[in-house]
Amino acid sequence: MSPTVGKYIILIGAAIVLVGVIVYLFGDKLHWLGRLPGDIRIENKDGGGFYFPIVTCIVVSVILNLIIVLIRRFFGS
Image (cartoon, rainbow, N blue to C red; front, side):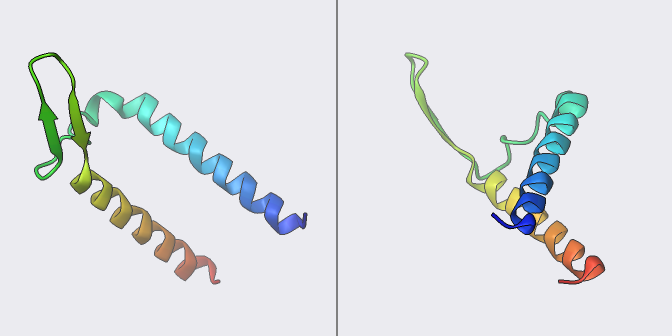
């Protein structure tokens, strides 16, 4: 493996830790995440069901893409 791969692994690990800290500290304020209009939720009487947060996935994807574009723009790549 090259040193570049090691740097990417460290960056990914740091990002995971950062997301974990944000969820830990602000988890009570993120209750809306996963319950946006357009998220698919099908429940039955027995307590089972199906849940697919399509709109939440799109919002998270857009935010992550914006962050990546900003990082590339400021740090060059």
